[in-house]
Length: 379
Image 1 (cartoon, rainbow, N blue to C red):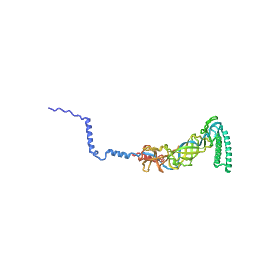
Image 2: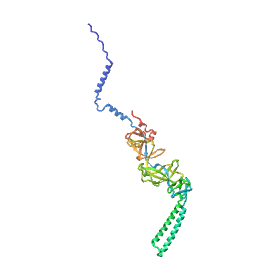
Image 3: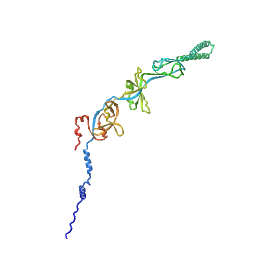
Image 4: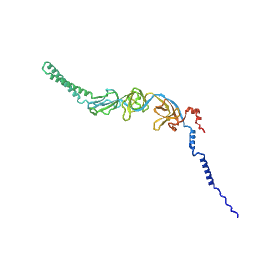
């Protein structure tokens, strides 16, 4: 009897794939890669790192220059002389000889007070003085003839001197009925009128002398040592007017709260055109300083927030240099605190950190095409 024919088994595709994977795994293990001391991943990373180009930045070579340092601060105008005029005797105003805003001279009468009974007091004092003179002269004659004691003579002399003092006091009082300007200046306040009664000590007028006028400012403790007494200064007033002055005063005691020092600049003001209380911008010359002129765009901050510039040293490493802004102009800024020669990063400083190695090129090198080849990345 013939054996029945067995059906052929069909090999599934999944089995084929499993076999291929198994063979591949065995081949990989047999190659010795698993036990290698230097994994392929590291080798590839090193190769990739070797092929990665260094960051590129644009730079400018800068050499320090001597700059006339200038301290700029804000202040206000203030009268150098101001007189608060008070009445020295009591009385009623009977005449007003000036008006608010008038320019007056020293000694000019502003008000006249009523004389009241002072004339009669004057007459009485004169009469008493004459009586005391006669009494004293008589005591002298009697004393010489030994008819009167020296004590009585001394008493009469004292009475005479007292009479003289009384008369002098009344004469001074009468002279004070005219209230006069103690200085040349402008009448800033004159609140009283004819008929008003004033007491001794009451302020009746305020006079200010605006020529010269001073501009008072506050200079920081960092800059006070750079400003010199007697130095010329320039001030720009709120209306745009520029005036020249001289540094007349620098305080030696600073404010405990603001850490600033008061400074006075005197300005000629013959026409009194500059009023008191006007805001002014003071420009004070200071000592010369070595500085670099750059664009404000090169400024950056370090990790602590200090302002400075990023530069490249002779090894191509990025460095950070804190700076002091000496002067700010429309064309650029002057920076102090930098080395005499420095290669400043002008473009790309935002993308590199201190300590990074970089490639550099100046504007001239870029414009000439000298850096085109160096910018190409090797395949």
